Length: 370
Image 1 (cartoon, rainbow, N blue to C red):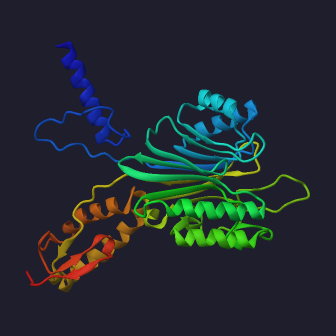
Image 2: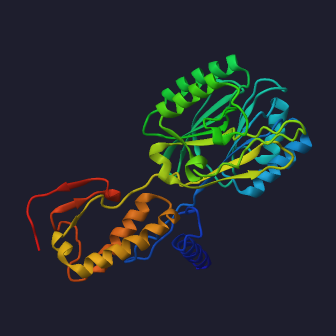
């Protein structure tokens, strides 16, 4: 009897937490009472971050940096110029946890490290180092979605930089197109004049990077979210006689998955010339509702309905960014549309115009029904 009461309370608590979106995912099987629908789970967004650490070998600096990242609540962190070695690896595992992946070259140059928050437990499907110390690739399975995470630190010398871009392009070309790609790191180059206060030192490398971004359909999330910002940078040297500032640190996302990105930011990191760049995105597999619904064309002749729909559309478009994805926003909108005109509800299988997701696809069906 005592066990049953504890188990019942356990299930009730889980059901309440999931049903009120207080939990990221179920911690166990939730027994839903007969006759009730399972609770709807809204996955929490994942925060990605990238930061050039300018060396993690010193214990105090490393401890301060990891504490800063832990307090920020970032789920996936790309670190560059870590200067790690096997001894540093052991210290990082002790200070952060076992969800740390390294790629190092020497204790004085390069080195990239990818951290996973203890709150995120992705299944790692593969790990690769196409360019040791400069490019670390992980393929993970999180929330039902395969995601390719690539952490890069582009060399500063022109010959090494061009060779690196060639290897990076080959790595990107080996990925499956439908899979989600998150590419982050220190690129040591700017594609636009507004992302720097001086002159670009390597035009050839910039052209190569631009070709990679265009060929693989990648988008700089922060620039897409802040098209008019010309005063925010990620590399601000502290030297008195050198004031050249640049936005070298980027997080790119596959264009087809751009709608999953909700926000992006750049914030100062302690004791560093580089700033932290972040992107918040919902990366999980979705099970969308019905992709098409049929609209009754006779409603277009109803002036009251047309006015109501215009007001509804304007009001419903504004909160689109608050939804975890366009799919979720569209499904909720479909559920609300029939309430606009109770006498002539747009119903599945009624009417002669099929409206696709987001209004992007339309088609005509035969017949006309009232």
